[in-house]
Image (cartoon, rainbow, N blue to C red; front, side, top):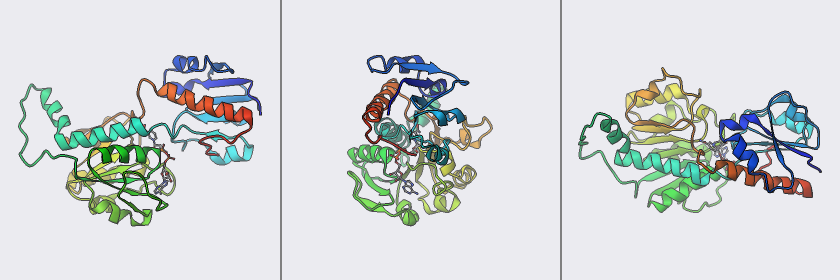
Length: 308
Ligand code: NAD
């Protein structure tokens, strides 16, 4: 297989600076070129993009610049014989650090102090409220790149990490692995439950009222995966009813999170604007992955992260 042109579709700017990204290919044998809509593609073109476009099905290979490729019609790619690759495998450190950030904040109340700081208020919480994460149980649901990145960091903090995954193969730092059918048992004793599965028909609405009732009432939910995995109305209901203590949320059913969402108003909800993987070197991580795959593609080897 050959690549004559390596196109970068402008929708990548949703997550990375497009010019810096194109420049990251300067030392690669095939120069990258920035394109918008209205371009025509052929089998010797490769495309790196954030959003799908129907015309990409005419290209030779398409790379999605994010881990979650749920917006792409994988059946259409398979029918067209066009390989589709995604950007998973690079978010363990970034998303792992964000998840740890939420947990440490909930434990040591940084978010609460910051709220009071806005009023120059020297706030004294109840003695019972702050705790250490060491020794607390974390249940990580989904043990792929994100899940392992979270588990490894939580383990380093002395947490008791359990997980949910479809195979019972052991995972470093995870003391016990539950089958997805035993989700309720897995989450029942956890102080923190972190969601790290992709959005699929099987995971949509995986967390709703029954799961929140099953969780401890002092437990925190962390969702760094995709919004629709959690039933947001049920989450608001559970927070109102005190079925769980709070939530660290990076992803939502509707993004940006609408201004009138009740989630904004809970002291024990920390909202980040889908920035789990957003750091100043994210474009370099994606470029490395694309270059590695371009080399494989040219050599006729199987592609890393092929999802269709
Ligand atoms: P990954 O493919 O490496 O891991 C996903 C894991 O979930 C796999 O091990 C898979 O077997 C497992 N899984 C799938 N369905 C399951 C189920 N029903 N029960 C239990 N386990 C199941 O992907 P990743 O890089 O870890 O990313 C996971 C998801 O997180 C992505 O699909 C994406 O939607 C989201 N994500 C969000 C951000 C962010 O910025 N917040 C960044 C990267 C990824």
